[in-house]
Length: 263
Image (cartoon, rainbow, N blue to C red; front, side):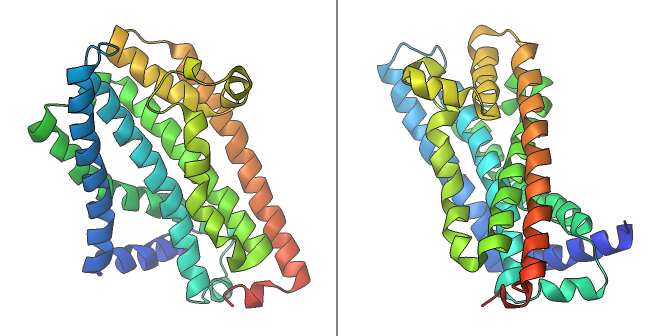
């Protein structure tokens, strides 16, 4: 595995992002608008609900965490789609570059994309709503790590589908997070879901992440079992996603569909 090749592919996407004002604006605009919107909605809930002692803090924090997850997953997919749309995916192997190097490069670049959009949104929450993610303490890192791993995992799953089925699988890239969001219990406790959906939800690391975020903010206690369980499930799904990506690439190469993947 070559660090130079990984760094080279990282630079390609980094320059595509940072040298384009519309791309940067798009990354910053949507998270900032969404966080601001949820902040005002949370203010309304706090005025008309007694469920949360700090509705603004709880809902807005969960909104920020979810947006980080969404941006990470979509960011990975967008980077992979950039290679498909430009019909450059097969050209990468002239380097020659390995599949593992492509994945590692996109993983780090997706993080940069997510932070470009998320940092300005986080900075808005303090002056507008008096909310700081630091209220989660040192456990904030563990929650962000779990969300990052799950976002990357979803991105790899979708990219494997793109390799296997081509650009027709592209719509799945945009809908994956929206399909999982109801089961992720982002803004409400898992008890709200019907029992059959609760069983499915417990198979996702999202439930443990957001339940723990609310637990810390509302009860000021930490349940390390939730954090460990989220990381454990993330590890399983990440290994499965990478394995599926390699399998899809192998199938596409044997069928000769790689050369037509951008068409």
